[in-house]
Length: 434
Ligand code: FRU
Image (cartoon, rainbow, N blue to C red; front, top):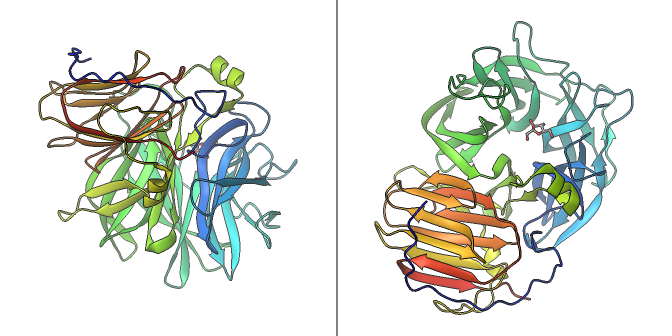
């Protein structure tokens, strides 16, 4: 924690939120009610983004997974559509439709997802994007390859490679570490196992289950960024990435890091307009189960984030330019800030800073530890003077630091005036357009 030196503290007026629940995000995506976790199969098709997501339609807690579905054309206004996938009694997904991806095959969308107990890979297709038909040959992969003793086998990621389809499935080598298993197919139905795509090691210091210890990798994703390829997985309570070369169906990592710090988990990428790629992450709640149930909703989607490469080949992460549209006229330093605000704060080297709302800290920077926080989430600050882009939306605090660190946290409570503490070079804010 930083020693708070009140400096240029801005007492800021407040314009009330539209929703009666101050914790509920307004321009981050979430279903009308109940539980959401991972983004599934996001895709841009015919000028429209489709978002599917892990969904429990019964309550604001994780249980019996369905696939919710919504679409948008502008990333800000979402249309909620009927549930796309529900467990089929007696079927390979009888206990839940877990995470997966989508590919277009001969003009038709194909969902590739995991059925559970045991974990197996399944297909579903649609002619109208509303009604989804499960493949008669499900499961198309009935379990891990012989000889692989894996704590889990889920979250398929499929892409086109020449004349074939390739698939990564999140898995692990029991007692050794997480992995993603690589498969190939010509028809999406018959799959041949090739090899482990990459292998990780169990973190000897970490406690908890197979995922928390790094024995199991969840939600692998893999796609080109600039002249490199980006691979990431959710494990050890965070999202690890590797940037590297992809040649002869072999991935050779050259650098690694944390893709999203804090509340963000299980991200999934999509194609996007203007030749871009988007990454979406589930923003976990950071309050107790009882409070989530009482609120009647749980989980938010992150903003769509565009990965690119810096000149030195390192990874840059920027919120999609579409979110510029949420801003009204810029308000100057120390002018009124309202809820749903986007801020740009340039800090001074070696000076502590924090921003709070009604006494609850939203973000902070401590130069002695070089830690950046968002609510109770933290991340090592990137090198150099900090240039922060901050999105506040109900309980969501989403921060992009120097385009290199993507940090999210949740801060609950009434929307009250913002106050800035510490030294900064500049603080600009844009209210949300009504
Ligand atoms: C990641 C995850 C996935 C799984 C899904 C179940 O958050 O555990 O591995 O498919 O959520 O909801």
